[in-house]
Length: 304
Length: 310
Image 1 (cartoon, rainbow over the protein chains, first blue to last red):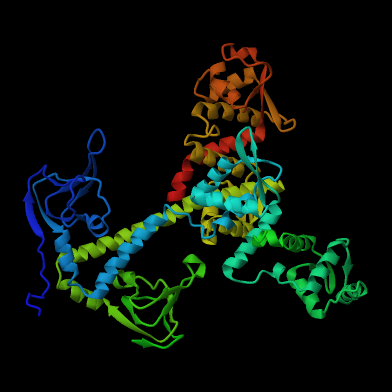
Image 2: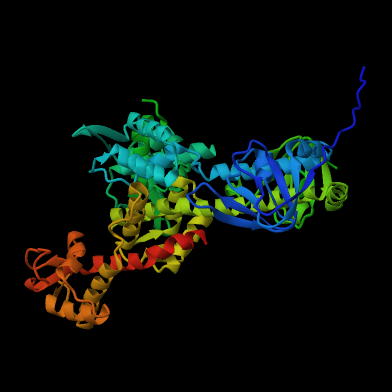
């Protein structure tokens, strides 16, 4: 049986009059209050250094301590009266009792605003990179493959750019090493790292982008006939120019089953560029790209 | 309010003054300006539009019901009626939280820009080194900045605007062109040095060093002195005279030029000894482009931090 009074009890705020010089709040205090200045003047003073420094002045209507009370965020300054003043102190109990009487949606608004601000503040210290391996692969793809770089320095530079934590960056570097995209060596007791092929790293970055977007990556979608076609054209003179029927006839003569559909796909892959109406030549960069993807398929997928 | 699956509740940027509370079902929010169009789910208990309710801000998302959903709509009148019945400090707290959030949003934007800057320079500088050309396609730059640091295209463009204002590059339709082959790599290395070693880069010159190099450049330009393999030569006598004129009567001594010689920016015709008179040196020579790039760097570097957080 419920015998007590079930109505919400409001804890009233405390209104006090203080003399100039009175310390309203000190960071050493365990008590957390919202301080509202009704009359007079208060100042936030930093007393952590060798000499006190006024940080800001409060005028009637101003308040401090909301973040301290709502989010337990430490307030680092003294609040001192610079004139005789009247203040209202909202204690934790007072605030909680008042918040309990608010409609749920208003309480949710207060919580949401507070949470969003906290997340924004936290985000400033975090990396924006959602895929740290992709970030590192992109970074490494700009290194000179002929050079060995001190591992610590490379990671430091990468972390300065991306704010990715050291352990995560190191794990990703090892992951690139397992895939045989980078190699390590020790020289004069200094660990060094070198990139094997910036081009293959770029291909890897593109693969990771596709995985991220959950879309099939075309180099790994080729049919066996398309792969044979790719290998065949990779050995051809890049200046070869022919119209579509001649290309199809050529493939047929080479014993390759290249359908009209395969031919259209090959154009979509970018293997052929149309230099004039119905006259096609090879795009060696695209062909090289697809070949690298196939050659390093296991490395790219990380299934070595 | 009941909304059927697939029905739109509001569009991004619509004028608004109400809050939505999801009572049941699921809403999906999308925004062109945030997170590259990423979809956000709002399930039961979620609220959407705090700033529309508090400050009549336009809708942040386009909202659509993913399934049949029940939504409570809270209008500003309901907020005002509630606040009237409460102590004034509740409203003050709401205002405080709202303005603090705005400040945090602004700070995050500035922080994102500052964080994206080195990786953008790194990509451009690497591209210049790899290709030997001073241009990069804008799309390539955006794509790589996205891959390296998740930098959205609008931030890349904002950073390029800043660099363009500083006259370090030009954005010409879809091509970004550096003012010289060296300036972007130089700026990147200078920032990297400051960040990693926590001290000023040797590329940042003192006022005296800058004045000596400016006097050197002035002589080359005014006298049309030809470059030989990029190097230019000035006799000590002429340099001393120009220095006296342009450096407010300052006398050029071995001590004045010593830091530039140590940094390998000025080279001397004979072995340099800081204790010997400067007249013992016949002439000075230097890499003209390198000096020009360094002077340019020193001109823009002090403005950079301010521009980034403006």
